[in-house]
Image 1 (cartoon, helix red, strand yellow):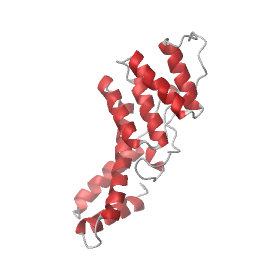
Image 2 (cartoon, rainbow, N blue to C red):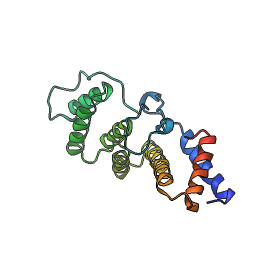
Image 3 (spheres, rainbow, N blue to C red):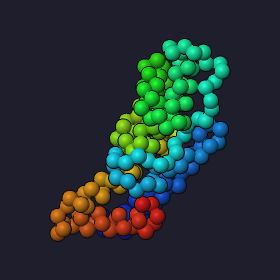
Image 4 (cartoon, helix red, strand yellow):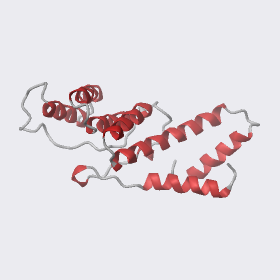
Length: 182
């Protein structure tokens, strides 16, 4: 871990992941998951992931079995911060439209905003199984970096003071902090 080339490579990869721009539909930018240094799945995120901003479309009939209706309700609940309701609708969409990647992607965003990073990772993987999309891969990468940083922080707490891995972990986290990634 002390190899400078390896450290520089890791930093370069981290900077690349952190600096990636993501534009959702309509050209709206997505905030990065790394903006908050909270650990693993403990606290809600304040980052705003992609969520289409549109009211309930008039073309979506008020039929609870209609996918357009379910999607509009999910989006409405997501936008108003009713996470449990949005989650239920998006999960319902995954059953109604099993081959559609978008509900899984929105679930990943929902979970990531809540700090439920392991669930977000699984949802992004499900979206990628259905469609290869750079947006899905981008958000998956951000979640994985955040999970990795959380794991390093936790390992530093648990490792004995005289363990060389603890010192390496501290140095690595310090380097990330100095580069502005934490």
